[in-house]
Image (tube, rainbow, N blue to C red; front, side):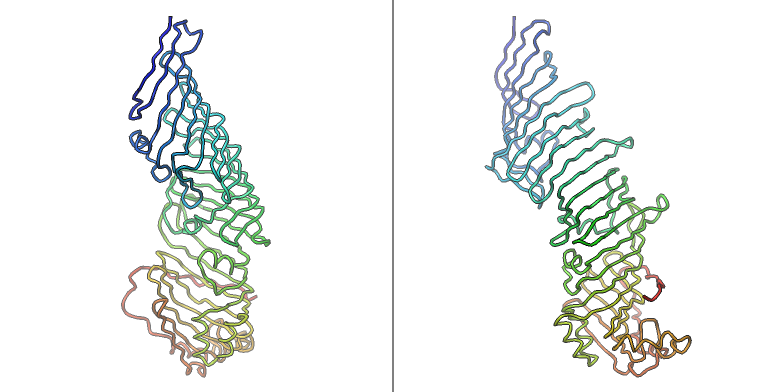
Length: 469
């Protein structure tokens, strides 16, 4: 009339306990199964699901299933994760012994595996929603009505598979913190091969780093197996409007970057630990390599209405130029500047600038050269212009200005300077004789380029003309 089986069983590499009941009633009542056991990290490895970076220890599994004979139709799955440690990098972690459970209703058809009513709870984490998987366990769709991780994310997420086997994701978040990945996100010149992804996001509070918060953020992302092809981010950065956009005007061609970033000083301090800049509106117009290809970034960066504070190299240049009063100002409230403009290239860790210029009422500066962030060294030369506003007025006179003043951004009285060497042992030199030399002759005091080629090939930055403010 019935068959009942109870005892230990091997499910692939997993050793568990089975209770099975079949009433032999022609299917009027389904067959019933109960499977219990402890699943370890080694078991997952033997199943081919290597998740050692995220899971360690063990989970106590309980499965109550129904079906027809040996074929399972649906099951209630419960996992006690207390004896496990779970990790999401720097975002969240659960140690062994901390209470955590995972429950879901499993339904199996000929084409899909559905996990409905998924619920996971742990200290600092709460997840709930529905997930549909293909027979090979690839994601078909997900509707997560609650995704909460303390201080990291509070959102709803909908995801689905696209026609080109990519993913489409809709994110509606109260908060999202992406600061752990900002350094990687900013590597636009790297090869970021990935699956095709389309993302649309609305985020009330988006954290890019400490004290760097975008409110009312709206973002979209488009990418394929080669990488990012289009991206936008709009919102208010610390209360001021910001925008960032990457587009690919010609399919497979170079991408364009347009950025408008207020409070650049705080952004540089957060992202690069650069503490000598205060405030400033940064705008960047540049081109990036085609998606999936390595290559340089080339464009023009402009910074307006900013101050330099505690800038040791600049202070030493001023001191060597016998401008000690201005050097002391850098250690006090800072020195204000109206504008900074720099055509640049960036590739393989080398930032190269040509005809960069910076100007304020007290002083101006031009710069040419390169900074090697991988070797932590630099080689830059240029011209220092005291009393910049008055000193450069004659530069606006046709022909005469070119003779007396020299290049754009220089002045009647100006001093040549060079900065070379590693960051921690920089050699700085200022040539006082150049102050009394007419502009068109001042180039004779420029350093002679070395004959030895650089160890890395860096494309020359273009000179980008712009109107004077």
